[in-house]
Amino acid sequence: MIRKLTMLLLLFLSINSYAQEDAWVYFIDKPNVSAALANPITILTQKAIDRKQNHNITIDVRDVPVNEVYIADLKTQSGITVMAKSKWFNAVHVRGNEIDINALDALSFVDFIDFANNNLDAASRTAAIEDFVDVEDESIVFDYGDTQNQVEMVNVDNLHLDDFTGEGLTIAVMDSGFQNVNTMGAFQRLRDNGDLLGGYDFVDRTADVYANTDSSHGTRVLSTMAGYMQDEFVGTAPDASYYLFRTEPVATENPVEESYWVEAAERADSLGVDLINTSLAYRVFDNPNYDYTPAEMNGQIAYISKGASIAKEKGIVVVVSAGNYGNSTWETVGAPADSPDVLSVGGVDANGNYVSFSSRGSSAQVGYQKPDVVARAGNTYVVGQDNSITQNDGTSFSGPIICGSIASLWQAIPEASPSEIIDFVIQSSSQFNVPDDFLGYGIPDFALARSLALSLDENLEQNFRFYPSPTKHTLNIKMPLTISSAELSVFNQLGQEVLQQSINEGMQTINVSDFAAGIYIIKFSAKNTSETFKFIKQ
Image 1 (spheres, rainbow, N blue to C red):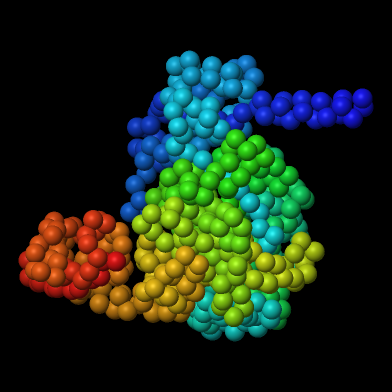
Image 2 (image 1 turned 45 degrees about the horizontal axis):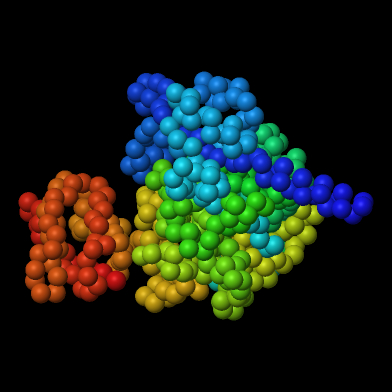
C-alpha cells in the first residue's frame, strides 16, 4: 500500500511539474523608438556605440529596450511568472500553465506566443534550443608550462611574442559558474590589470556572479583564455578584458536558459564587447516535450541560435563550443553552434587528431560547414576552482582556446571587421580547401591568419580586395581608399556575364549562392582604373 501511494505521489509530482509550461511572449511595439535612435547614448554605452561605428553596424530598433510597462502588466496576470526579457526579439520568457499563458494573447500589446513545447502552439514554432555543460615594444616571452601544446597547436604563441596578447579587446563569457575567479591566484594578473570587469548572474538575478558555487565550469573555461601562473600556465589571451555572465543552472535543463543567454548577449552588446565565448549547447530538456532533434540543428529553429545570429549582426564575434555528442546517437552540433553566423569549435587531441566525442557537422546544416574549426579538447589543461592545474575533456575548452586566440589576432589587426577576422581564421586553417564534418576547416594557424591580413593591407591604397576564395555563399569586396565608386562585373568560364552592379566605398558583399561551382572572373572598373581577378565558387 505504501509503495502504491509513493508511486502515485511521484506520478502526481511529475504531472504537476509538467503543468508549468515555458513560452516566449512577443510584443507588438516598443516605446520612444525614434527618440532613442536619435540619441543612442540613452540606450547603449559609448564603447558599444564606438564599436558599431567602427564596423559600420547600424543602431536599430532591436537596440531599444523592451517596454517595461508591458512587462509590469504581464506580471500582474494570473499564474504568470516573467523569467527573462529580450530587446532583440522584443519578447519575454514566461512560465505558467497553458491556459494562463494562452490568455495573454488577449492583451492588446501581445503580438504572438511561442511555446517551448511546440505541440502547444497554434502554428509550428520558429524558435528552439538546448544546453549542456561539458565535463569538460619588447617581445613577451612566456613559459607556457602545461598549456604549451594547446597554445602552440594554433600558433598563437607567435602573436604573443610580438606583444599581441588580447590587450584592448573585451570578451563576454557565458557559462554556468565562476567559482573563486575573484580570489584565485590564476586570475591575479587579470585582477591586478583591471581586466576583470565584473558581470551578472542572470539565473539568480544578482550582480554577484561569483556567489553561486554549484559549478566551476566557467572558471575552467575562463582559465584557457585568461589564466596565468608563472612558468606553469598561460591562456591564449591573458591581457584581454572579461565580463562574466552566468546563464546556466546545472541542476536543471529548461528553455529559459536560452532566454538568459540572449539577455546576457544583449547586455554584452550594450557594454561594447568584441567577442562572446559560450561553452554551452542546447539539445534536450528535463521535459521531453521541449526536446530538439538533430534535424532541427539548422540555425533557424533555436531561440539561442537566432539570438547568436543577431549578436553577429551587431558586430560581435561569437565563438561556441561544438558539443560532446560525436560518439552518441545525436552526433551533430547543438545550439547555438548550429548557427551559420557563429564560429563553432570542435576538438582534437594533443597530436591534432579528431577526438570521438567532438560533435560533427550533418545534413541539417545546409550550405555551410560545422564545425568551423578545431583546437585541443582531449585532456586539455585547465585551472580548477581550487587553483590547481588539471586536465579535462570537452569542446568546452577548445572553444575558448580559439576565442582567446582571436582576441590576440584582432589586437594585431585592429582595422579588420568581425567578418574579416573570421575569414582570416578559416583561411589559415589546416584543411581549408578540403573541409569535412569532423574537423571542419581544421586547426587554425593564427600567425598565418595575421600574415594573410597584412598581405592584403600592404596594397590597401592601390588595389581592390575580395575574399574569401573559395567561397560558397558570399564574396566580400573592399575598394581602395582612393576610389569612391566602381562597376563590378562577374563572368563565368564561357565569358558570359552573370552579374553586374555598382559598388560604393567601404565594404560590399555580393551573394554568389546561386552560382554554379567553378572559376569566375571578377572585373572592377572605376574612372581611372580597371582590375581583373579570379575567384572560385565551391
